Length: 122
Image 1 (tube, helix red, strand yellow):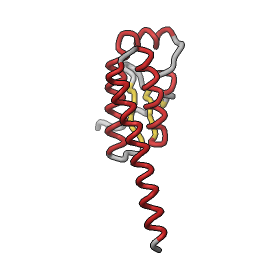
Image 2: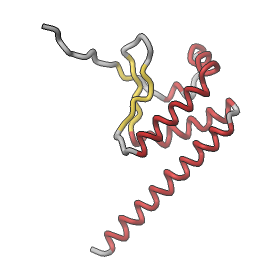
Image 3: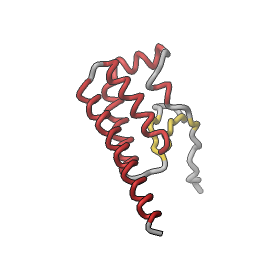
């Protein structure tokens, strides 16, 4: 009679992983920062495109801790990632992130204009 219960996860904040003064995090980011940012950028893109209310940003190895990013935080996370990319001087990814942020803003403005037009026809 096995139980299929899953262990609950402890949710931790995500911001410190993009703007850290913690030596352990800094060491990890200096070694894997580019890979981490690229993977995280893709996760946020996918979540934003599919209109997910949140995405699992980080699942810590050998830990019950996870970091979740909510839909209203997607843009601010991308902006922090952009600053990190500038700091590690990976300008190709910087450009891609910056372009995605601009497109997010354009889509938002288009959606607002559409709602205003629809409201005006009522």
